[in-house]
Amino acid sequence: MSLKTRGILVLVIGTILGVSLSLGGGVLARKERLSPVELREDQSRLLMEVMQRVKREYVEPMDDAELLERAIRGMVGDLDRHSAFLYAEEFRDIRISTSGRYSGVGLEISEADDRIMVISPIDGTPAQRAGIETGDEIVEIDGLTVTEDGLENTIDRLRGPAGTPVAVRVRRDGFDDSLTFNLTRQRIRVSSVRYDVLDQAVGYLRLSQFIDTTAEEAARAIDEMMEHAQATTGNMLTGLVLDLRNNPGGILDSAVDVSDLFLDDGVIVSARGRTPESRFTRVASLGDILDGATMVVLVNGGSASGSEIVAGALQDHERATIIGTRTFGKGLVQTVMPLSRGRAIKLTTSRYFTPSGDSINEIGVAPDVFVEGARGYPDQGLDGELDREHDAQLIEALEVIRSGRVMHSKAAD
Image (tube, rainbow, N blue to C red; front, side):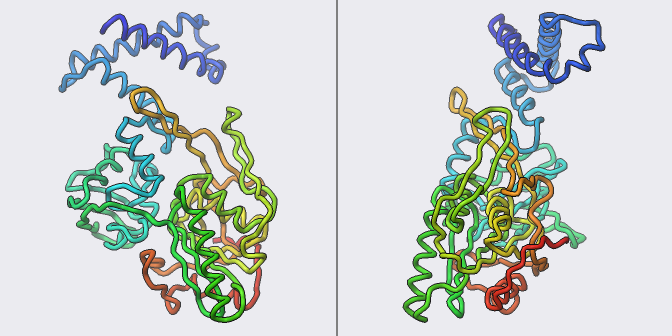
């Protein structure tokens, strides 16, 4: 190991221990009262010993730079399932996906209990058309298990050049055998909004995720639905169904802006972290785009993160009735922090809270009206047809709007 690398390791470990000492002083005090300098040297020595062993005896050769990057990746990745060290290509993929354009199969996935789970397929993508569903566990990609891959490597294996094939095997509750889906990657240009005017001038607005343009697209869609209703019935929209089922989230500010479309004032979401930048409160500005018309929000177990911010804000302000099943329960904010040479870390920096002060992390938003969804709904792409005869959650939403019922007592599920 070079002297330069040793110097870097001593500095890195010294910095890490400077933080951990303040958190773990009670445990360290029971030891032999090693000084901070001795502790830094001891831990630096341990890391160097491990690196030397790996370099000398591991079955594949590795250099100092690669080992150090792997150590950093492990340090960040072990914090929680959402934090990660990102290589330049992975950082680029994140920037691409939040803009709504990338090449892959169109799956939003998460890691839970060492399993890779589907949060939701994105509307109109190969994964959605093939029938992959929320709650599926990905077990193999192209015949190779994902057990040791981790979340970021699994995402990397699902993405690839447009036109290339990929086989995804999943395990699904209620099925004895696993299911294999043979997909062809495509250029994903995600439009996050679809809309329609239903009978009696009721608007339907589906948001598949929250990207840079979602709030602007949603506002434009509502304006067009209002113009259509005025031209055909002589009335404005009498109500709106906001469909957030299987919406896995996305950009926090986009979810805040969507919430703000329907609120005149009050807190939308607040966040608490350790740094000033991670502590913030977002407040609604004057102007409800629907001018108080009745709203229903549809949610399910695939509604996560940004979807839960919107549903929680509209529920707490009694602006909308929430219908469906309990949401996913992701109440953590990740910040992507650029590093040198195009790399970055994605770090959990805050917990967010609904206007009432509730944390939904690992709990979710409970609906006001619990309605179990039938498998496959919503299964339409953004340009598909709604099924108003068999989609039980949509049927209930339309009934609530037509009857004028407003319910805000959280239903247990």
